[in-house]
Length: 103
Image (cartoon, rainbow, N blue to C red; front, side, top):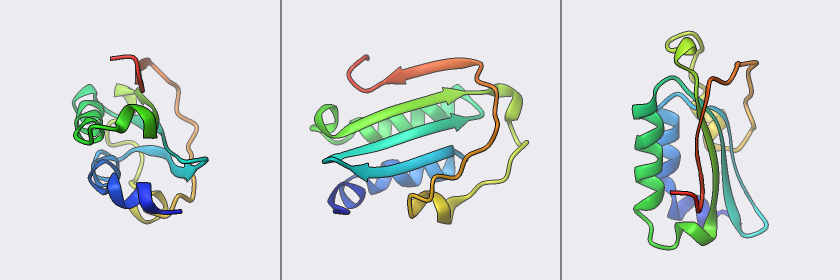
């Protein structure tokens, strides 16, 4: 079940390092990454790590928002993120970045 988590370990680490507030979950043969990061550069780092795997279009569904207003405002939750605990925070969304398959 955790095959995709292993395969996309670098993307999950990039999400953790970017301070993603949201969740990473593997289900139905896909890896779901959804959340908010403080900067566009951090969102780009996550997407770069995802796109490093050639088959990402068929395996990853990602919805990464940018909220510049939360830069430094929320703590990071790396352990929960790595274990798919679905850490969430009430964060107003300011901008939609991208979704899998919509370069």
